[in-house]
Length: 154
Image 1 (tube, rainbow, N blue to C red):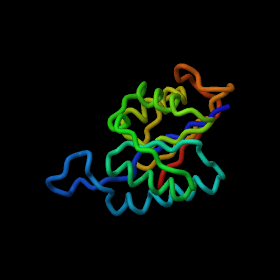
Image 2 (cartoon, rainbow, N blue to C red):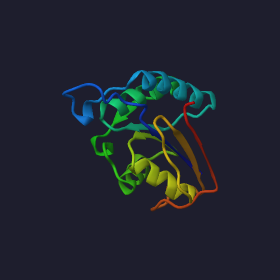
Image 3 (cartoon, one colour):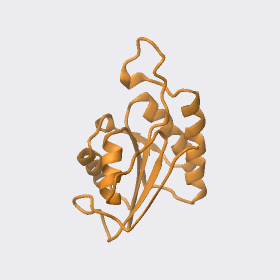
């Protein structure tokens, strides 16, 4: 069995003039939610083999909270910025290991979560979706899994 955890970046700040989309920081709510959701995941005992993040500031900052709480190194990947569902799946499967955590963006994350869940899943900001994928390794394409759950900040 392999485990895929998808995390949408925490709430970002749209009110900073002159910044590109890539450089938008987290707002106050995002700065609160990222460490809380990271700590909640850490309490489950989950430790990914790889933690991958988009290079966008809001995703990177969110991922830094998860890396610190989980005690694992963070790897940034430019191709995760605006990645589609197939690109996210390709990054997960190429990462190797039995467990991968990806911090990225919508709509790709919601599309991948929906594909794996077999029903529509909305990845709200800082939502954490965990999928247990049966078998000894990563399948070539995402398929509906039996076990999954999603947590979102309150």
